[in-house]
Length: 335
Image 1 (cartoon, helix red, strand yellow):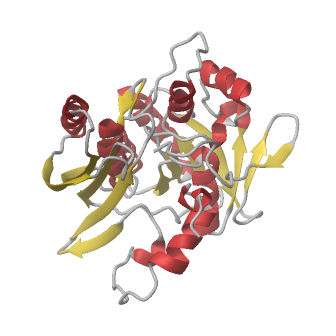
Image 2: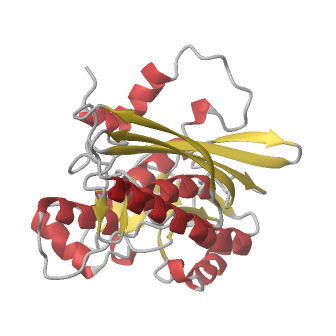
């Protein structure tokens, strides 16, 4: 029986995909294909790299401070392409499955939001599909977006080497905490907004500055920074050491997380990327990121190490402990 844990984005989900959903298919001949379990596949076309990705979005509530399911769907697909190096997003598709009785005004609001987000990402939706399910057969609306982008340099999530610098492009924890607060009706006395946004522009700034020295990338969505770093360490065969005092966690996110009993490093983000950068290029990448409106809070937060392979260590200033990805999301349907 499938459990919510198997849909949370962590090890249980990776095992479900590997053991059940991707078995029996013909082998692919791609450099980055199904077995890589990355954010997308890379299809060579001439001397260019076409990156292909798809994602379904089921979030409650569908409208939240800073965004909505439409903005989330476009941003999520654009960002999956961007963190593989495909910042030039050529086209998106959008499949909509909607419950009978769902307000048409809400659907219009979602479509408008998707259009605005496409303009931010310098892309557009070119095709799609629409289905209507019976009332009660679906929880509101589900969006499935697929994207195609072009990369001059493909960057996977498995390319870290010892001493590579770990760089985060922005503040951590905003999306998950804002959405949970909205869902539960909790007033923290401050305006908490999701960071959901397309990041292909800020990632392109980093890639241009690094001149081939960005070695790995991942967007820390479900399972947060802890999950993204753990997966990068495991796939790269290195350890990762993070400095807690260097990780940009906003004060309102820290306060809200403490009240909810959550670790902001394990909370979903939807508008930042985690980069591995060769040591010689780290300062140039940070300068480039901070010159972009979406990268002003960029920070070097740690490094890859040649021990503790597959694990993430967190230096708290008082000692060092393991930072593990959570077994499940703090609540379902974050993204």
